[in-house]
Length: 440
Image 1 (cartoon, rainbow, N blue to C red):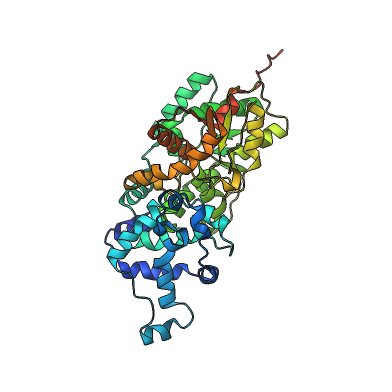
Image 2 (image 1 turned 180 degrees about the vertical axis):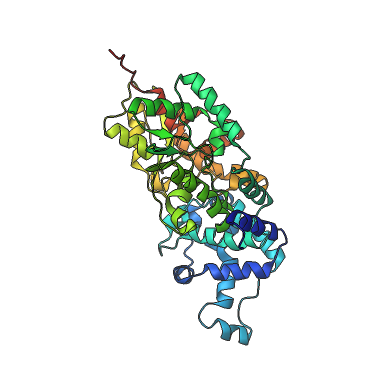
């Protein structure tokens, strides 16, 4: 009998503990289908992707040129599958195989110095999805033992506990109880037939649990039928970050199981960028079938409720506010105008950054980088690009719609000695809800 997917994913992680350069090359080649091959052949070496990458901009190190990070996969493709590859091998002019040491050294380029943010993809005149190809290259690195140890550990925790940070149901239950006490509202759990299923990231549960109370207040006011699940509540997908389809599929299937068990119509992706991309865009391909529900990002739903007149705000924040665009939600996910409409509704002095929306710089922690301890120094250095954006606005507070961004921004702001509070957009909307009218 074939073992269940979770055991296969666990076995894949365990087998990757012994670095294997040949296995990495095999997975690299397997990742290069027709579309990827076209893209790898299309690069004209113009360097525009380097000018889009904050790691390259702040260091000037040519190794951080985004397309260069793909070199191990490019070499494997050119050696094994590219036109005339067999002839080149016969003549001894094919690229040499990558050694285990070379791939171990390359881990910094494919993980520590790449947020999968997609800014390089946007800049490429040839339309190469460099971020997507890095994601594919990580499949080879993780399968063969060359991913960062921190991400292997996070993936193992996620498979074992359901959360990359080890958050289990009792911890979430306690946070729910605290928010119920604070708001005076009941937070529904495991309600079958609710319209919306809310899933959360571990970062929200541990660091920003006030979002649970904010959602309770918003949905109560708007008359939204919703529930949290007691199992499958974690939306963060470390499988996408490390580059393991097996792990990603297992983690995603837990959310799908919860949604189908509770017979909901929609699953609300939380304030977490990579959770959104995994759930919304990669999900059906990962589990091999279409969803029985629709996925909506929380900011999209809040904007919809406001436009339908079901959610009204009163008053506006008097501070000068600016908005940080989470890469996976805005640039890669297309949810760009909804947060701005919400910001206009609660801020009297909303100021855009010089490069905003799809052009915005990453916080520096996406793509799993915030979980890689050895990458901390480089991550803080890359924040200089974001800092320049923020400084140009003269903002008194920074708002975002991703809890990981929020945590990373807070850390970097402290590192740079700045005084700038970072706010969650959902909580900001809840703060300015129109007072509930007394019932007759």
